[in-house]
Length: 339
Length: 198
Image (cartoon, rainbow over the protein chains, first blue to last red):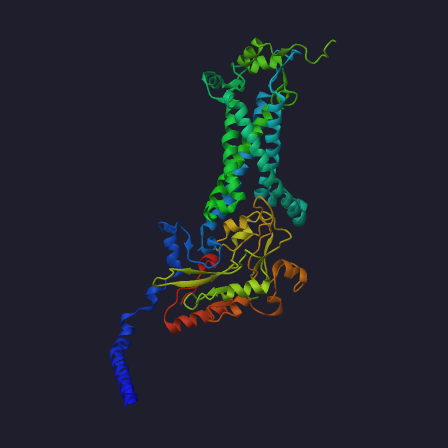
């Protein structure tokens, strides 16, 4: 009796449930549109282009593997970075570097080598101490290798690969990458030392305005007075400090991608790194020119550290006056001391 | 020759991650690298979709365009492969890739990137087909054995399709017509500059 009662209740419940759901089944095809909830890739990409608040312009979702950045499904910005790197970057690099070489060639042909007007005096004065020369060459040596290995990444496959062949070029590029990654650190150390050592001599002052007004002696033959560093050298100093600082900052992110916070940040820092690098390379080409073939007596400052007194008087008159007051000049320093 | 592609039917993918596991096992992929992954969009909300994503073997591949040592090449089957002999681990292909496919094992201090690793469409690399050296560097070469990528072959719901473009597009179109909806071929617009018109 109990058994049949239970089955009766069950049958009644089943009938009630069926009665309730049948109309719902009948209504479904008209009330539910299955395509409404399936978003097309095209629509999502269009929405991405506009940017979603909080999500930026990357299509991201949940992922079960520990690498959270793998949750980014599609990030079409890579296409824009590619266009920059394979297009604008080549032009910016070529124009700034070849343009600077062209300018210097024209300058050399018109102005010629800037000579010491009074001729060499034979007496010298200490311009840069051993430590100053050490930090200069530490930074300069690293910079040259960093510049060449960096240019290789962008231009090597067009310029060097056809000469070396792909195997040798790839092996060379591998070593260039190691050099770039590791020499970045002594370069940054050199930047810090140079900043600390020379910053007080590079604060712009009133002599710089006069120096710039008179064309710095680059145009015309007048030598406007200058302290330890003239306005042109101050521009070089601040280019190296600011440019080198930006290169270091962006470069550290490129070395440690997990700190940058995603591929979009890496693309951004790579663009900064590339543009600043070619501009600084162009500035350094000018610096190397005027420090060597462009000016008689200038290279002594960073080789022996002792510059000719006449050179110093012509180019850094105020600095010489200050040093002479302290009795820093060595008359006939090239002669052996008589003992 | 065939134009090999992947197609993930987001309306079928159940996020079982078997494709991810199969890939790692088949190619003995090192720790920390996933050649294939499953991303769930709108998780827990209406319209939730899971998509299995790996290298899409793009037409006019961005990775190949930006590589400073030209280590990428496209096979006759339109599979984008690379040479680990030439790769210098600079990271540029990762910056350019719209799908986050290239990954780098961390080989030493200073975060130095090792040789890039990505999905090979189970087609190995430039070394001799089926050789031990090829397996060590790139994983199994199923294509040379006449087999399709394992991830798609063993997909339980057949959400992930691999094969010739025309063939998998036809299969997908038939499904969409039959069930009346579909969210499109994920990544096709970005990878191949085309999508499936139904």
